[in-house]
Amino acid sequence: MKPRWLVTGASGTVGSYTGPVLGSRFELDLASRVDLDVTDLTAVRRRVSSGGYAGVIHLAAATDLDRCEKEPSWAYALNVVGAWNVALACREHDAEMVHVSTVGLFCGDGRTGPFSELDEPAPVNVYAHAKWKAEQAVQAVGPRAYVVRTAWVMGQGAEGDRKFVGKVRGRLLAGEPVQAVGDIVGSPTYAPDLVEAIGKLVDTKAHGLYHATNRGAASRFDMVEVMRTSLGSSSATQSVPASTFPLPAPRPVSEVTEHFALRARGIEMRSWQDALHAYMQELKQAK
Ligand SMILES: NC(=O)c1ccc[n+]([C@@H]2O[C@H](COP(=O)([O-])OP(=O)(O)OC[C@H]3O[C@@H](n4cnc5c(N)ncnc54)[C@H](OP(=O)(O)O)[C@@H]3O)[C@@H](O)[C@H]2O)c1
Image (tube, rainbow, N blue to C red; front, side, top):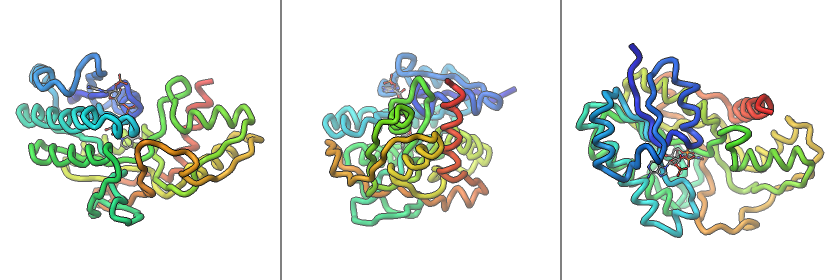
């Protein structure tokens, strides 16, 4: 019999791949916000107590960085209290927990990475601070947890992707000019690769803190160049500084990631270029 796992925030970017990637190995109960509000402790306890779950993959979160900056109480309620609630219910019912966090919680002290699990967080914005406090809340409650930090997630397909890759791809296909930030770097991560890594981590039973991203470093402009070549686009592209697009929430200058802990468990993730090509294929096949 397949172990039964609950997924919170299941209709989001990462959650949308949990069924396709893990469905053959786990019986998944996919809960969107309307099915389960993670800020409601009573509802979370009720769901976890009645589900007979081996574990919970906790993906529900406030991920709009600019809204987090403007509405910190929303960010802390969803990101900290939500994770805390899930951790409590998991501990009470001896379920494992996968808590997904962010690599974007560094750089506030001037360091520019790459960042491993051994580096001390120094958040530059409310979102990152809330995600860091959420990690601490989970660790304080102490369920059998994998805390998995990721970065620059891409996915959700031709219909759902309203983020960077989806928007830029549309412009490149239309031959429109594209400006992209060249002075902020990260480790872009294809959501199914993250979900795959989560599945492998769950097999290890080695609870702890992990960085899980595709390998390597890229700016948004580097991503555009890979996409432009892949699509054979005639668009003019330009690298611009982040100051070209002022935003309410400050961004960390680097989310470039090292995988000290993941490698210790024998888990490798492919390069961001291979991952971006795979996502481009997914988008092409959807058309
Ligand atoms: N995307 C990235 O680049 C990135 C980078 C680093 C870390 N992460 C982390 O990865 C995890 C998954 O992110 P994602 O990209 O899949 O985010 P996402 O697409 O924004 O999905 C988050 C989901 O949470 C749901 N949600 C909102 N409020 C909720 C509530 N009160 N109760 C239950 N569900 C609620 C949302 O539903 P509605 O849409 O209906 O509101 C949405 O489906 C998050 O922990 C995020 O912080 C993401």
